[in-house]
Image 1: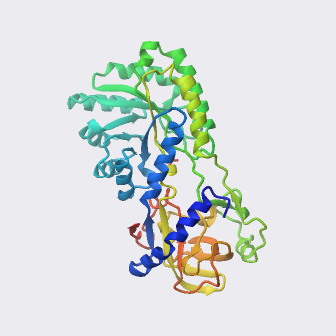
Image 2: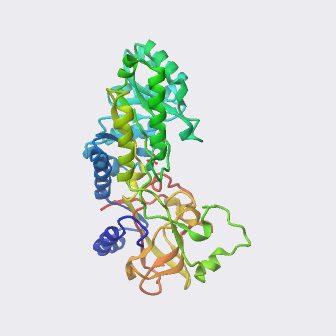
Image 3: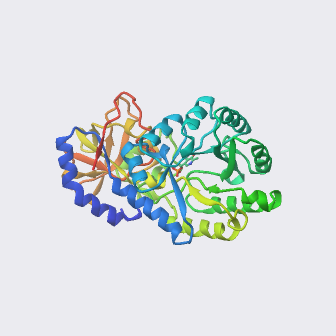
Length: 424
Ligand SMILES: Cc1ncc(COP(=O)(O)O)c(C=O)c1O
């Protein structure tokens, strides 16, 4: 348990709320997502303060794709922050939540996307991803007599594998000069993004390359035109997740001859899990801010700094509340909720997350126990270990806490409905 950041604090919170969770399970039908808005408030504050302590005021545009729950979006807006969207659907959700400022990013934007964007142009910055997008938007905006605030997404060798997005950094000057020609386009931003960063290296290298490129290819007057630099999301939090030691490479197809389940149940693995090593946000902020102060502020003197954290903000805001419906053997049980609540195979192969038996709470004793979901497929596994005081029983209530990022958003109506969310 001590492998996770804030384990003690988080565990203490579960203990404090345990009886309330059991009551919710009795009164409302499980399975449920439990939504805790205080986690969003806390994560926003930690993120902002980490940068503020380094002298950088960062404008947060929370990435809706990591969890689009309305209560979450409303919380972000109430906290005075903004939203980052990638589709018409997400834009509508952001507007419904009352967002005052929105970034619209995402490849291959269509005429229909731009129609909705132009309708709400006062609130939106568009991060363009191609010359086609620029030309189409310029033409549409001109017809509507609207001036659209835009930036462009760039990639460097640090965004390796993400080249379907944006333009190569080397084409930024050409893009800028074409954008300058359109009266309907107020071109003033630069954006880059890559996910799953466990340390700040990629941000730093991108910023260093960008600084050098801008100095070589832009005049001082041109550089003064830029109003925002958007460093995207991708800040990997110190999440309540680990990797299974029997699946270090996070393979999703285990050879049939390998009976790993038998080995787990016999507790053959000395170390059951491996820590996901990710640096604290304070280190990200320290290192990124250092480059912004030293290499960007002098080159882009008029920019505000934007970031689009998704996972970092939403990772701890949802818990899953499940009922252990059937006990099949002393080491196998099936809950009412299924993996359609989180997408596919998340906890079967990719990540371990602690599961607590709230009806028989014990924070020390974790037994090998396979918790299946109730979908009509064997590929529906919540986990292979269970924290429980004694042998689990039918009707016990289980909690998988702090799993808010890319779970609810990836949920799918596979066999069963996506369960409701309960606001704590
Ligand atoms: C443009 C953009 N911004 C922000 C994010 C959010 O990333 P994360 O949830 O890793 O912070 C993504 C995720 O893919 C993205 O594509």
